[in-house]
Structures are given as structure tokens and as C-alpha cells.
Length: 562
Image 1 (cartoon, one colour):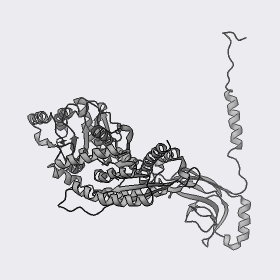
Image 2 (image 1 turned 180 degrees about the vertical axis):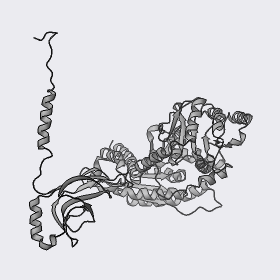
Image 3 (image 1 turned 45 degrees about the vertical axis):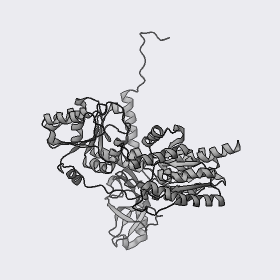
Image 4 (image 1 turned 90 degrees about the vertical axis):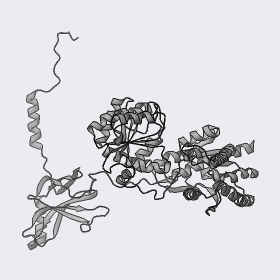
């Protein structure tokens, strides 16, 4: 029984006992190695640890065997690059010699090459230039001392029964392939999905994408027949009339092929293929309609012309007839639902794909000059409605404070709205009219040049905003300053932009920070990761489109069985 006043014995050994243990260890170490040995280990990518020992008896035996050739021999350590070879003593890619003074020793050795398998051996360097090896280490990999510049994301898709195997461009598309395996259990079977794809061909860029995706669908056991008219419409014929005239010929070809070997569904692209889609009902085929954009998006919400109203009417009729509507992003989905009263369940998102060279980015200096801004001046861009909800007035309130510290900064306001005149008057009264440009509504084909003339974009909103502008900005290498109230999940504070509060002081701080360019390197790293890991691939688009087809074909098969 332990009383409260009892002293608990110490569990630590007495210092004198520790000293005895240390003396015993000192007498045993370093351990004496018998025989010949050579050890090479990596401390880091550019530093190795070498340890070697040659038994005197081994040296004497070698000297006796060599005879007079052993005169003047000295101990040496050689390091060989044996990457991807079975080393036989003579086939190294490169040999590096380490001068050592003793037959036993150890040292740190600076490694001059990386990303290689290195092997060390110790022996005698003879006077005639030859080398007699006595001990050899195991190969050791020395990794790179920098991030890799190679992005190899390729992989292989293998179906559950191993009957369907094909290469994929990016392993980061694994979730969509997992959906494929889960939602299409018959993928390993013999069922063949037959699809008629209709593209009137008025949009050349769209035609190329349709052909690429349709060709890729064959590896998923889908047989796609494309009905397209690639000829340019006569200049005297309006686009709606041209689409209606082409529909008759394309439908006749589709109906003839369907009579010969029936299709499971028809997939029409854009509004100008809708005349064919509507007639496909005569064949009793379900319809998939892809709207890659709406007329409202293309006209930027401007006043409708007679042509715009006709196009909207075709889009509305196509949406009403379609079993499934495919759109490229969430904004288009919301418009299709709101404008054409589409059932949200029938509207799915499948991103567009384009592997063309794209537009060459213009020189930012030239883009600035085109806006009437000095080529060396930093440009801050606001784009959107000049209204209270978007916080355009917050940025205007921040301009005087920013300009006091950054006399070369310029502010560009792209858009119109109820606060435009008030903001212009306020900045004129502050004597800053020459530092600001008001562009009004900018057409979509010109906005890219405006964006590339800017150094960063400000979205100082007081309420939730759509992510389209922010994503466009960061995709083009521009940081984004936004507010917490805007709720832009794609902006990561300190990586691709800054997140502040919806008050002038916070906006002033954020603009000053970005004018000092603290995110340059961070944004470039973020862009590299994004473009490598989240780029829309042809594989992803193909699989998601195939899943949409299976949804329609499965519903049709279920209805037929009932």
C-alpha cells in the first residue's frame, strides 16, 4: 500500500550506468567489417553517401594475380549510370570516378546527375588505365530535384468481363468511366446501340466536334451514322430558310437508312437541325437534342430581331419534342429551363470538346492600345451590369484611394446599367475621368480582347453571382478579386484570386494587393494543375454522351416491354 508521503523510485538509470553503457558501445562501434564491400545510398537527389572497405588479403591476392601491372595501382571508387541496363561491368551509360585515399572509408559525394539508377564499385585503378573491381553495390535510384515537366495521365479502360479494352487520355476521367461500368451493365454483351446523328452543317466548328465524338462512340459498342450537309448556304438565302431547305434531303436519307436497318434514336445538334428532328417523330424514334448555346446567349440578351425570334421558335419546338436535351454547361441549362419551360429532369449537361488550335492570344500590350490605354499601364476590369447588386459602385468608391498609390493604374467598366451615369459623374468629379473607360455593352466576340487587355478582374458583388466570368478570367490567366457575398466557389483565396468583403475598404485592399502582383507565380501553378487535371477530354465527352443515349434507349425499351 502506497502512502501519500512515499517516494516513488525513479525509472531512469543512474548517470554512471549510462556512462558505462556508452563506453561499451564505443569499444564495439564502428563495427569492423570483414571482406570487401561497397555501399551507395541516397541522402537526397543531389547528394549520396559512399562507404567502402577492401580486405588487405583481397588486395594482395589481386596484386599477385596482376603481377607487374599492379605497380602504381591506387584505390578508386567508380559510380556507374546503369539506368535501364543489366550492368556487366562495361555497358554503363556513363562512369564517374571518385578519388579516395584509403582502402576503407566513407564520405558524402555530390551527385552530378539525377533521375538515374547509379551503382558504385570499389577496386584498383591500374597504371594502364584499366580498372580491377573488388566489390560492387546494389543499384540505387536518384530521383529528380525539381517538379516533373512531364504530364503523362494516360490510362486503360477495362470492362468488368475484360471484353472491352481501350486506352484513355486521362486517368482523372476515372469517375465518368466508373459511372459507365455501373450504369451500363450490358457493356460486355453483344448489344449494339444504333444512333442517327444529324448536323445541318451551318456551324463548321460544331461539325468537326460532332464528327470526332461520333467516331469515338464506336469503341463503346455504338454504331453512329452521321447525316450532315457541309456545303455553305447561298449568300442570298437567310439562315432559317437554308436550314429548312436542307432538312428535307437529310430526313429522306435518314428515313431510307432507318428502313434498311432501324435506329434506336436520333441525335440532332443545334436549332438548325430541329426541322429534321421534328420529322423523325414520323419514324417513332426518340429524340436527343443538343443546344450548344441558346439564341439568348448568342445575342447577349439584347433586343430580338425577326431572325432571333424565328430561331427561338425553332429552339422552343425542338425542346418540346425532345426526349432529352443536352447542354454544355449550367448557365445554358438554366436558360433552356427558364426560357422554354423544359422539364429539368430532361436537361443534362455534357461539356463540349474542341482539340483545334483555338484563337491565338493577342499581345496584351496591343490589346491595351486598342482600348485607348497605355501599353504598360495595369488595367483593372469590371464586367457586368452597373448596378447595386453587382457592386459596381463599390469599385468606383475604391478608385480614388487606389489611384493615389498607383498613378498608372487604369479602370475599365464593361457593361451598362442603372448606376452607370452616377458612377461616371462621381469619377469625373474626383478628377479621374482620364483613368477610367466605360465601354458599355461589349459583344461576346470582342469581350475576349477586353479581358486579355486586363491584368485582373474585379467582381465586387453584394449577392450571389454566376461563375461564368470568373472561370473565363482564370482560364485566360487573369486573377479575380471577388467578395464572400458573390459566393464564387471557383476562386481560391491566395491561389487564383483574392476574396474580400463587400465594402470599399476591403475592395481597396484587394485591388492594391493584386496591383502589386502577389499571385503571379501562384496563379500559373494553379493554371498548370487545372489544365493538366481538369481539361475536358474527348473520352469524357464521349462517355457522357453515350450515357445520355443509354438513358433514352433504356426508357424506350422499358416502355416497349410494358
